[in-house]
Image (cartoon, rainbow, N blue to C red):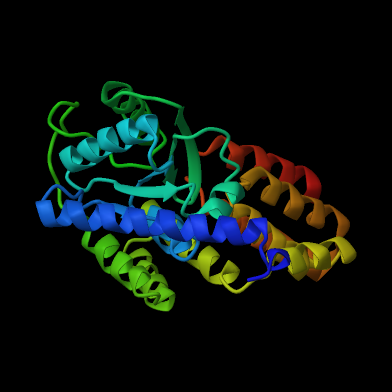
Length: 310
């Protein structure tokens, strides 16, 4: 190799490969010794969508952004492993090593390492940044789960914590519909997952959980093959084209920018007439179903939609 052939990018790539190999060696050592956390997985650019965003449709995922050979990261990682094991699989633990996956860490706009967040239904709930003890992490998890139960996102008997935390009134197995749908999602068969939730809703039209998860699966299907940059450019060039605006709204919903998605479609309703206006309205109603019925952002957007229509 000539000096001119060497670049900083080459150094970054080599560093990332070495860090990834170190993480894999650590995981294999833990499995051999029987100390591995069965509910944790290392996440990279290749599996982030499936193991974090898609899995979060049915199970809360705690996402830990860590750094190899960092005492603070090791402390947080060990504490989360213990909490996840105590919880017995009520939530998954996804780990990102900023050295092994620097581009993913950059895309997530991580400001500090370690950083912990929760992802549920594709929505990110911020958590501790910097050093944190097991007790502090348990307290944060307890507060998040309490809030999600109050919003109706999680069942009232969901604990999310192990024996040292508040126990659930009754320990229930995973809903068989969710289990079947999650298996289909894990296999990449979103059509099957959609059919499962559609059937559950047909059998019980008042099943709001099935309605929401059906909307979430359909959203994933719509955005999986989209080129975000091209979609945004098309929407900018064609502000009155309902399909172009709907694609970007879907991308924003998938990325957790719910209010941006609602505002975009409400603006489209205001700018269009007759059939185009009705199509924009119907797409917005589909987006509302991705969130719980009582979500204040949905209520606010419904009022804005009424104003736009009349």
